[in-house]
Length: 204
Image: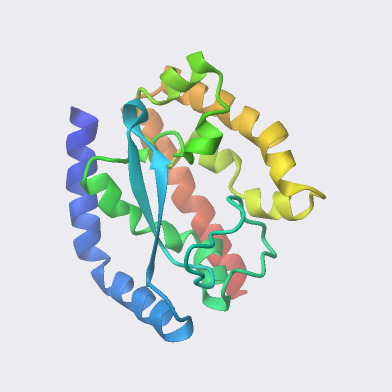
């Protein structure tokens, strides 16, 4: 309950403080690429309940055609502005609405689509889904460069299912079994540090 209260308060304040940035990003997305400003996709959340995860749209809009579920660094569906949003993780900001609504937390396992959750071993699936998924987390940090790694693979989808997904499952299980407020704070600080490093590198 304490974590949920903190999530609600911080997401509410963050949405107010970041409103100018939201409006700026939304305007550039709208200006530079035809289609909706936001991207939504159904993910599996707490206790296996599906919900729609929100992001700023970073890909060319194609109605009824989402293409591959995973994205590589050099994916030709990504818009030029979307590439920057993804690099700096700014496309994730609309998930603050998911946190405010109680569908996500700031820190937790990364929410997956149903087709990948169905590949989880049953015992692992129930344990991972016993907590709210997070915008960031132990797994998200471990695979911060996932798109770059996938771009180097001959068959990215197979590599994701056979190599990355099993490691993500182990990482999410480790988070659930060691979760705590101090652990969450450490993850948040590390996330901000890694994003800041990317921004500084891009500005050099």
